[in-house]
Image 1 (cartoon, rainbow, N blue to C red):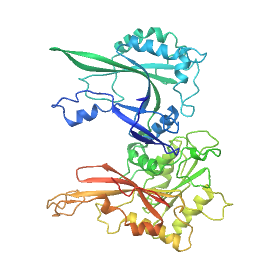
Image 2: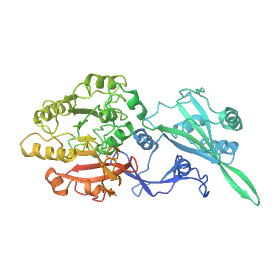
Image 3: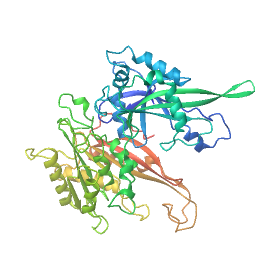
Image 4: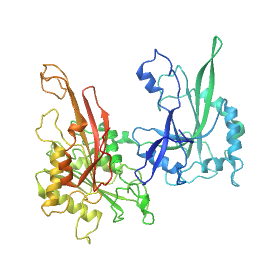
Length: 498
């Protein structure tokens, strides 16, 4: 939930070059002081957060549109809401909303309320006849679970709306409970209060409008796909990789700052992606699903996402025809090219990938391919197979080789990014060789560090890369994977991955 106030943290949106300071606060202060409450319950009571922001020193402000765009890219955020009013009763909330929006412009209250919180690029046009609905969500000390399946009783929802009749009577659009243009919510967060020996409940009611919903990553889930490998990358992880790579939303030729900061200075309206270990193309599916790509928004200034995947597995394991169907049934832009072969040892395969990206991204008139804007991949580290080589190190060696052998570069040396996963394991002290813990039988406890697993600086320097960031995703008690990002020609980066 979002409101304007003072700031503390930061929000970065991949479609802009701006960083906005923000602060997160728990909205559900339930059972926080209960020593008997277990850790899972405390985490669940933090499911609803306030997002607080204010203007920066340069006067720029975090807008509803920016928040909406950032939300649409988030695989771990269900939705964001802008708070319109708050009070201790539904009637008080209605009256405060009336006071706030009755004096704006010359429109009616309903139009003022909607237009004050609409996003031109993420919402349908708002007018006095826009459809709407109001939903009630109640949270209290007995509520243990929070999520989209939690529904308040309809009788209480009707009663709440009835108490807001002074406001509701100004709503001119039709009610639509299934697919409204505007979704309004009442969040009733009951707080326990002690008065003497008695314990009472105090209502903290928020009236809010939904700005945007998070990424629809569930539509890319392995159990919904036609082509899937034995160890597919989950859709949340694939979208996280794409966001770290900052795949842009759109290209505005009149405002370079509105494109991704990683888009080439050539100001082109195309962004090329290579996954050299593509598998069933989970990452390329995630890239194609980014909002406002060619398949999701009809915009003349949209960025054309051109992706190429290379996979060494035979057709019996990875069928490219089935992969293309996975894109088609979701109305997503197909990869520019899918190649079968060894992306590390086979230079011909890499040259084919470059030629297609060259033609799609820069046009045939460009005499030289400047390299992929981003290489995004989940390397096959083979923890179970105990592979001797490191596939990420192998890939960096290939970047060096292509640049030194007079080949066209694999990664844009001026502004390209390399984003990948690195696994970090902790080995158990046991003698069971059959236990699937990523360690050899009989090995003593060994804690690996992300610092140890990063490619050496000397190798990165030869490749023209510099480490930018690393973020941990805990998979189990013995295994984590880190998203790491390296950038070409990065002059000022933080070397600390923590």
